[in-house]
Length: 256
Ligand code: BG6
Image (cartoon, rainbow, N blue to C red; front, side, top):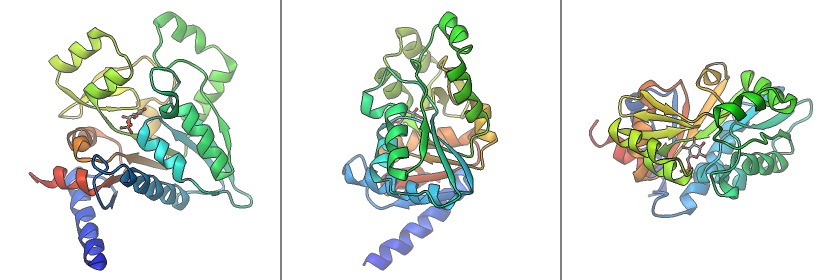
């Protein structure tokens, strides 16, 4: 029975790669919407994927979210001799519960992996004025330099409306999400069904361009409820490794 399940998942991974146009899909069994432990399995698969991509110099950028928190939870010592492991936050803080913030997750991940970390000590959503003055800060400038030469990016994908609410976005944003039919969110960008960016949070941190310089981009999201968001994001998303679960994969492949 176990062997049968494994070969079934392998087949599903191939189908998912073709459906979404990603270079690699990893599917863990179960549905994280129903069983919280499935999220930890996604986390563990992600740690292994990070490990496979390590070279001597590594700058690893991480976003926030409960799925990323599961990666930190499952992290184990990764550092080998002559390797440099630097974890950096891809996003600022606030707006999210502290355990789901990129900074918290980044520090925990680095400690468990036995690497170093550099956090982004800024609120996530900024006014024009504070955005421009914070950009001048040397410590912030440093993180941005790291993000420009990032080697591995690990990020979550969320449902647009739910993420806007979770981040306490204003009425204007919620309206825009409805009128422009945004369905997905990732690292502060909102996407419609065709993968078009309909809104971007003014944030200091990882930018769309940064994704194209990385050696490896790992997207992690699971649960049937994330199927639509995952599909939309990959319509125009960068070449990535997707780590997900059976619940999301089955739903994505339904009409394919
Ligand atoms: C956010 C990330 O913090 O978490 C987003 O910046 C992502 O990229 C979101 O969409 C997903 O959250 P969760 O809890 O569903 O993993």
